[in-house]
Length: 140
Image (tube, rainbow, N blue to C red; front, side, top):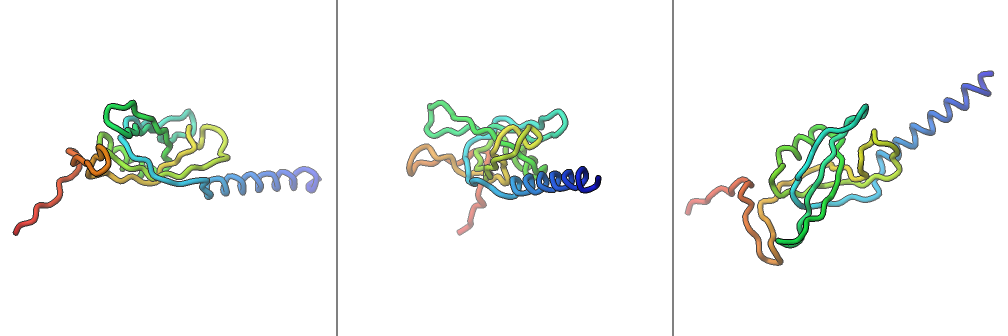
């Protein structure tokens, strides 16, 4: 009885745990996206994840492209919340093979954020970010 019922269930559960561990540990891709975080909210019926939207603008006056992302880490979500309204660079990892909404609405999981000090207008032309901390003035 034990070998016919319990042992296959234990093997199945072990395989599922191994699959989810591998899917969460391995990244299909990683990279950076720069823009302005325009939306961030904690969503989910049972499993709550941070879901956000980054507006990517390549040239002034053009329609922004949106980058949807998910955040698992509360500390990373707090850093992104503090950077809202500023030009930022989000470091993300793309994970594939995670089923359901308990792992977030997207496959892009943000792991870090960097606030940009300058806003590039075109090649070689930058404008200081008015919301970024001002550099310390040096005395001669």
